[in-house]
Length: 172
Image 1: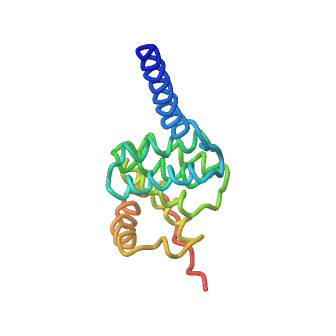
Image 2: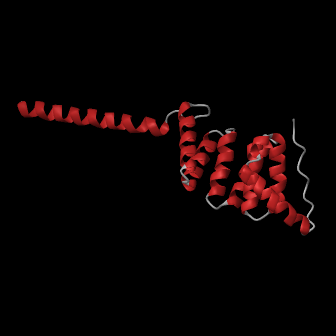
Image 3: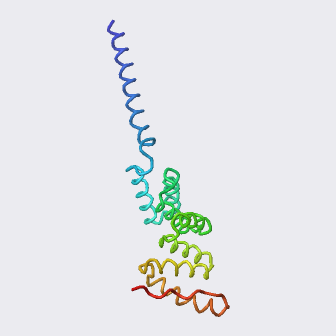
């Protein structure tokens, strides 16, 4: 009788342990990854941290997951493109920015990052056009590094007779 009781208690303990282990792992991977959820925002922030640490492939994967869950997450879409571009895949970034701009044609961050991708591809006329559009929407986009790039590239493009648009007048 004592052996049967011990066996039953051991069986019950094993079942409780199994159930608690299953409860501990399943919800974390399956819960609350839905548009607007805190878990999705946390995942987005993890992508930003990976990007800032120059872990571009990891960041791209995270942003891709965020966009899969919430296709309307415009910042994740733009940052997905930035991670691809930063990871030496600027041609893969172009469709991400174009998709973002199809949703919001006046998104200065998407325009600026599109310019970065074109610059990395050596398509300087296209880069300058996107940079000019971004600067027209948000003067803060005109960083010292971008000023130096534009100062260097505009004369080169004019020498090759490429029609480069004039920069927009400063807004006041």
